[in-house]
Structures are given as C-alpha cells and as structure tokens.
Length: 509
Ligand SMILES: Nc1ncnc2c1ncn2[C@@H]1O[C@H](COP(=O)(O)OP(=O)(O)OP(=O)(O)O)[C@@H](O)[C@H]1O
Ligand SMILES: [Mg+2]
Image (cartoon, rainbow, N blue to C red; front, side, top):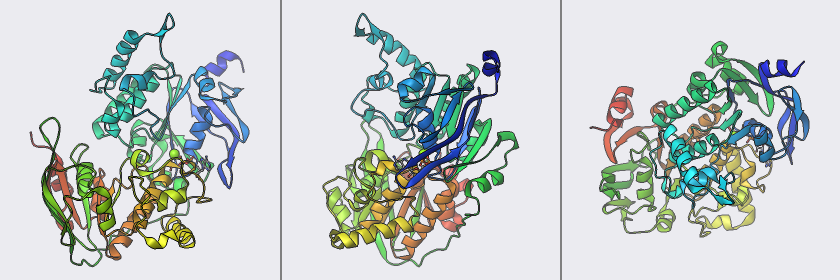
C-alpha cells in the first residue's frame, strides 16, 4: 500500500498478536485490536479484562511482551509516553494522575511548559490554560490548589491537560467515572469537537448508555482476549453483555434481611460551608440492624459530606451521631471507627488505598488515617490474617494472582473491591459505602450487591450512596434523597418510585 492509501485507510492503529504477561497473570493474550480513524472507538469488558493494559501499551507506558503495534500500517515502537506523544498519541489515565499540591495551571502544563528565552512563559500558559478551562466550561480559578477541587473537577483538569497537546489519538480510560451528568455532557461536546478536528478517540467506560451515545465502533475484551467488534449502530445491549460475560451470567434478587434494633441515630446534623451555605443542613434519620439505606442525590447534594460527618472526617457545628446509645458527636475519626462505623470512600486513590503497599496490607490496614490501628485483634495473628484476606478475596471475587503484589497491579475495579474488603475486615456494625460500584463492571456490580445483601443478613446496618437510580432502587430497603445538604425525602422501598426520587433530588430554586 502507498503512503497515501495508508493515510486514507480506515484503521489507524492495529495490534498484531499483542500479549502482555505479568508474573502469574496474562493481562493480554494474543490480541488483534483495531482502532478506526477519526472515530470514537469504545472499549468494554469486565474488570481485569485487559482494557487499561492495552491503553498502556498504546500510550508507551508499558511494552508488549510479544506482538507488534502498527500505526498507519507501519510497525512502531512506543517505548515511553514521550515517544507515543511524538506519534500524536496521548492518554488520560483511569486513576487521576495529577499533583494535588500544585495549582490547576501547573498541573495542566507540567512536563510540557512553554518557554521563552529559557524561562517559563507564564503569561502565555495562563491565557492558553484559561481558554482550555473555558472550553470545558470549568469554572475554577487557574491558581487554585488542585486538592481544593472535587474529584469531578480534578478529572476535568486532567482532560484539559491532554487537550493542551497536539494529539491525533486520544485515549480516555474511564474519564467519566467521577463526573456529574452535566460534566459528562461537556465532555461529550469536547469529544465531538475533537472528532471534527480529525482526532481519533479510544474511550473506555463501564456505563453502557454512555458507550451507545458517544461510540461509533465498539470492541469487547474478555479475560485478556479480543472477543468481538461492531459498529455501535449494529450492536445491541444484550449482544454486548453476552460478549462481555460469556457464560458467567449473574443475577441479583432483592431479599430484605430481618431488621433488628436501632443502631444509629442521627439528629439535626449540620455543617456550614465556607461560602455561608450548608454542607449538611439539619440531617436526621435512624438506621436499624440489617437495614440497607440507599442515598440518592445529584453531585454536590451532600452525600459524601454526610458520610464524612458521620465518621468524623468533617467537622459539624451542631447535631448528634449516636451509635448504640452512645453519643459520638464529639469523638474523632479513629474512635468512631473503633466503636464500629466504617467508611469506604468514593475516591479510592486519594483516601482508599496506599499505593506502595500490597493488596494484603491494604486490606488489613483498617485505619484510613494510616496510624496502623487494627480493630480485629485476631488479625494480628499472621496466619489468621492470611486466612481473612483469602476469604475476603474469594467473597469479593477479586481477580488477583497473589495478595502480596502491590495494589497498583490490580485493575481499577478490583482495587475498589480491596477498599471494600478493607472496611469489612475492621468488623464494623455500621458500614458506609460511598459510591461502592463506581468503576466496577456490570458483572462485578452484582457481586457487590450480593455482598451488601450478605452484610445485612449478618445484622450489619448498611448505608450506600449512588448516582444511579436503578441501583438505589434495586438494593435499598429505604431510600433517602438528598439535595443541597438536606434530606428531601425518606422513602420506604414500596414508596420509592422513580418519579418521587427524581423530584426530591432536584434542588428547589
Ligand atoms: N503491573 C501489574 N502487575 C501484575 N498484574 C497486573 C499489572 N497490571 C495489570 N495486571 C493484571 O492484568 C489484568 C488486566 O488488568 P487491566 O487493568 O488491564 O484491566 P481492566 O480491563 O482495565 O479492568 P477495570 O475495568 O477494572 O479497570 C488484571 O488481572 C490485573 O490484575
Ligand atoms: Mg482499567
């Protein structure tokens, strides 16, 4: 084929028999993957299917153990991110890859600063940075420290960062898992803009509706293998799910657990925000043993704040949190944890896991403030500890070859499961799960639902938050709806209709 024909050909990137082997795991197994030029190529598969590994190969973060990668029909070596970027390939990682202590602007330009006579051209960067933020409708101060931004906004900064490069192929690994619906809309507009400018996109997500909306071409991986591909318009949801899970289909049936006495009572919990408004505004409710409460609310409604207020990670000006008759309002986080409230945070990278440590250590280290406190004395016994970890790995169906491996060797969804396992190993009475299924594939979500059901059966009181209505409705005995830091509805399962929940979640003007 001539150069011209290659440039016109439909396929921009092709992998030939690409494998990637890690000790004990074949993350990719002889994969022939095609990426179509100037299309939104969506990639889907269960947790651990090899999606992120493939992206790392294409972005030069990792190299194939065998096989080759062709760009415009020619074999290329993508040995580093710089090399990949020279070919016009850049990536937005699944896990945020930013510097929390630096400001927004510096995060956008780090590693590719604009210089003028040997010094950074601050003025030019400021103007460019501002226009990138504006393109993303992102109303943040370019000089704000990144760690003052919510995780959704941080994700948008990461996107702005990749837009500042001259990119032909943009890889997005679950870019929306932390975004609100309006932010997702903005992102989709940006993707359309990029496509018009001739950019090729690879887009990974576990949210099927998103893939159907934004995708032109869909590819499915399962257990490190290429399974199938189709134009999105020819792909039905049942077909996709069948390709994803093969014969491993799972099903969740709601079964209420018997409810016991009241364990938690919250009265008038109020936390003020800096801008004079409320983070939490007079929140009251109670929770029984065996009960599962689902908290629904839009981004910014106060779900995460409620959890942080309950466990003592955020100060509250008034109100009480009473656990088994004991008022814990004045007690700190580690006391509340010792007394039996556990939290699985939303931001698993920032608050949930310790990157350098093994899967096992992450799980047994229950004190999220990292003071190394272990609630279960029995866990100090190494043999028991191993047993506990093995048991938890099995219960949660965590795909892992060796619990001694660093946590970063797990796929994103499996890291989330480790964080869940960690909370459960502290032997809590009340479990708070903030978006427990964020980034978890359709099949593994069912595992998490079963686990929540099991916890309730064992008499634990469970509270989980979700921005997915179907999830709240499927799993909860009772639904609390939040808006503007308040509880706007407290609905028993039988009354929790879609209409009631949505209308209560819309902030009143
Ligand atoms: N550095 C590593 N060392 C050992 N195993 C690894 C490493 N990186 C990935 N793996 C393994 O390779 C497999 C594929 O992981 P990958 O992250 O590509 O999955 P994924 O499809 O992106 O999943 P998710 O949807 O959960 O993000 C997993 O079993 C994972 O544990
Ligand atoms: Mg991944």
